[in-house]
Length: 114
Image 1 (cartoon, rainbow, N blue to C red):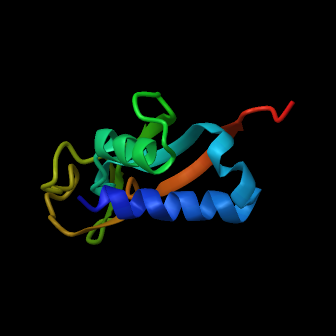
Image 2: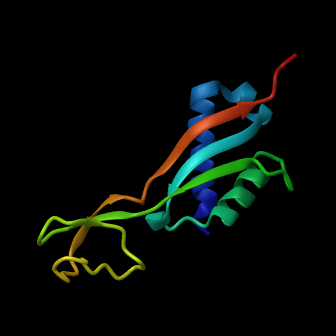
Image 3: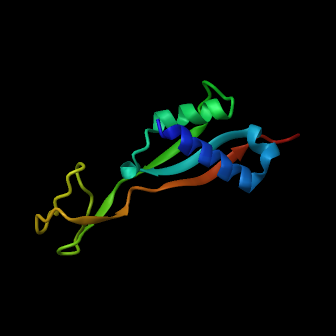
């Protein structure tokens, strides 16, 4: 389950941004996760819940990013239907990922200290 190590990296990034002392006050993490990233959103949320000691709380808000591939032959950009990339213009099977494999923290919601 590589989502656990991804969750650890997310928490380290958050700590670097807001400080170690506020990490326990994180209520919501908003992210963009590409469909081609290989991340199970459910496993990632569970891992974050465990690491932040917030079991059972919905702390992850995800905007899933659809993939965009550029055909290396004719340069057409398209969204593949599955993991087999066939260009809709020239039927070539060679493409480069332009979008859809990213993992980005977009926003954090932190409890008010008062």
